[in-house]
Length: 318
Ligand code: TXA
Ligand code: MG
Image (spheres, rainbow, N blue to C red):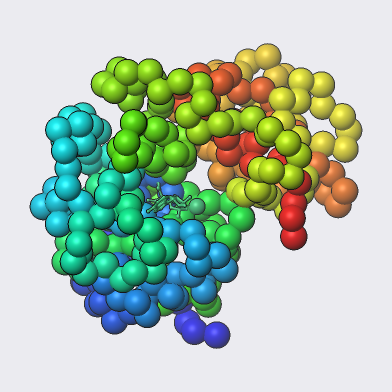
């Protein structure tokens, strides 16, 4: 098993991390959303290693991360609408899907052979220093095993990926706590994944995208793939917990809960705590116990939180 090197955020270590990436190695690093599992997006070996380390299906493409707008404009054409979105939301936790330019230099596996590319310009200074040191966009899925809980803390990255990747940059600054929102600007604007930028904020600029954008509810059992899943079974919208349950509350009404996403009912705090609380609840759950989450309102960041909780509660396929 390879030794996974612990790296700090000083210039020397960021330089080491960048050299590892250029050599086709995989390094986990913090962003303002969750930890990412990075590889140089021009390097087919690095990209292949991401898929291996995560156990990720190869048809599922990767977001590329840039350190400035110039780098982004070499990957895709930004029309007027895209420019307006960029002006309002970049750098920050919004990923934009656009038609990929010809001759980008991206390894084909990054986009899984698709014609569009998902681009993100993170606000995280550490992420940007690392990408700038590589000098080319860094492809990065969330730093977790496929289907498991995304990581927002160094200790969780170590737990899931130690021995599977070359390095981890330690810096617990994943302040949003939920992945970026993915907005497709290929055709009519559509949200492909709810995330840290609420749908309402995008609609102020782009107009209504309708309730169908990124459907939240299970249409038929089994249709929604299990994801973000703790070991224990998960139930959502639990108002009356049973004894075989670790109850995770939201808001002041949940007296008696063992854990809470936010005791005051603050959605930003709940988003920031979500994944770490799932891990904590899993540790508390005794054999046979499940985790029950109290209802979270379906507005603003609540949409993304409910999306993750619904997937955590989806029937496990493996
Ligand atoms: O906040 C985030 O977005 C984090 C951090 C590390 O930046 N990254 C992240 O990546 O959440 P990942 O791989 O866990 O989720 C990316 C999603 C996947 O569902 C993938 O299918 C979709 O983005 N995606 C990526 N490239 C795409 C493309 N070219 N076309 C359609 N969907 C794409
Ligand atoms: Mg992910």
